[in-house]
Amino acid sequence: MAEKYLKNNAGVLTEVEALATSTGAGDAGKIPALDSAGRLSTTMMPVGIGADTASIVASENLTAGDLVDIYDNAGVATCRKADAATAGKYATGFVLEAVTSGANALVYFEGTNNQLTGLTPGQRLFLSAASAGTVTPTAPSASGNVVQYVGRAISATSMSFEPAQPIVVA
Picture 1: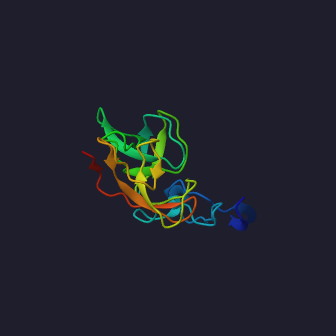
Picture 2 (picture 1 turned 90 degrees about the vertical axis):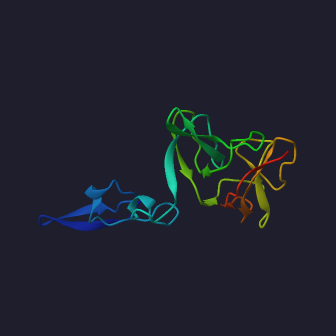
Picture 3 (picture 1 turned 180 degrees about the vertical axis):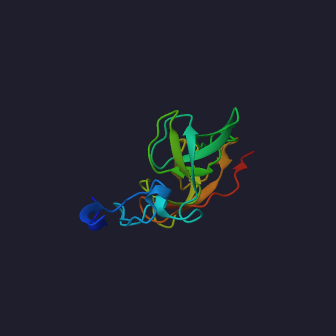
């Protein structure tokens, strides 16, 4: 719950809760509150400040932390799990929240993916061929697999997403 303050509303003091998110121009001049992580919501930041994201329809169920591929589906940008077992399904972003097929996913194109488990800090990470949408510390090596460095582990549950050009193994 956000902090509250007193507002002079035409001579009457009224208790008002600070905003944790903004819906746009209608919230101009209002006092912001920090979110549950102790930060300002990106909805309160100017364009160009904050995470590089896009809302993109998912063509399959996605799990929080999945790496995703964005592709053209009849003229509509669509996302699916990235998969090193299939050429053309390269990691172009990641999701931080689970999404069901057909719903819009908030795809992050850079930054920290903090929805992972079992990582070793400092480890180089690659797109996995064994399990779509996941990472592995070992580069895939089977013929037809895709080798794509996707970032480095910064904790047991987080990686810095830094996708490299994918290479298909001969």
